[in-house]
Length: 476
Image 1: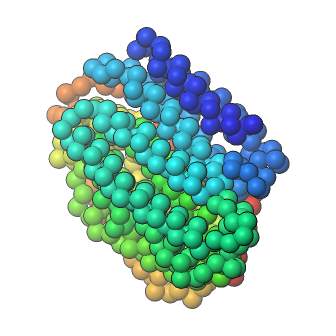
Image 2: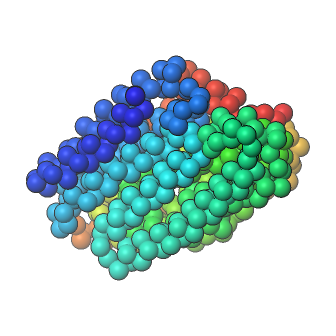
């Protein structure tokens, strides 16, 4: 019942937002619903009954982590949205607010789904909910980005559906079902050939939603044209829901004895994603597209850690939290800079720290965080992933990752330093925008969370991480 309330709460709030006539008061529904959802999430995580098996709705250990990240990130973005929409009077915010809440509901459903088909439906619904959000600016480039997002995403979700059919066929037998608990119980009897093909299709399908290379092609356009808070929710919310779908399928492969095959596939996709991101981050002049390619890189880190196994699984789950909050800080501060300069190009955006002291400074520190610099959280998780590669005698993998990290740091550093340093460029005089409480405080809090995860992981969060890692880890 508690999980049903978690899923239904944002939908009810969306209904309320739809009938409210006031453009000014409608965005206030977002933080109210987000805070209530966060409170229910904390209760659900602590409830022992939430992990019950044999039910279509339950929170498994990885699901608890993802819903915690999702709820906190959405709460930060909800408060930011109130300040953001205060500056956006040219369009009605009814569809925007309702779609944000519907997206919150569908991604919550992904985390709670314990049925293969229901999870697929929830991921597809999340895609449909975000399409109008990408088109919010209503420009030719935003509609192009929206159609590309839908087209590429539709191909990906179709492949994920085909993979689900293959996985279901591999598990056919007396009393079989598509509940994950039943799939795990029948895993040792599954046909390895069908299972391996199913896993490839699921990784490609849900990997498209994650933005793994080479299925990442929607990301630069969607992240570049969508409002910053939408980019934050895509990078820290939807992509992690797709990652959750992949690791649930990975666990079935491990239980069936095909873990080495699945792990090798994930390591390959991880390295390719990091490498491709490194290429496109060098010389990038659009700072929102830069963040899109950075997201491709970190999706690669997530699957790489899972593929390496052992302590790499714990590191990957920790990196999911670190990347989610860091992307929140980066996308929201980038949105403020974009609004102040009315440009995304570093040819026009200069001296951001002088023009917007808070957002410019947070963007600079966010760059250090996302490139794995201490003392921020991503440094810890990336260090653990590379350490796991060395411990597993994967020296070429570890060396290649370290080299690519250096290239990425230099490539992003050139773009970011050009943006934030020096005197404000003339483009900064086009608008009168300044950081406010609602558009500044959530950004700062996101960065504070990233810093705290780098200095000390709270005991409750560490327990959730270790429980999820034990849940997934079956190989030495």
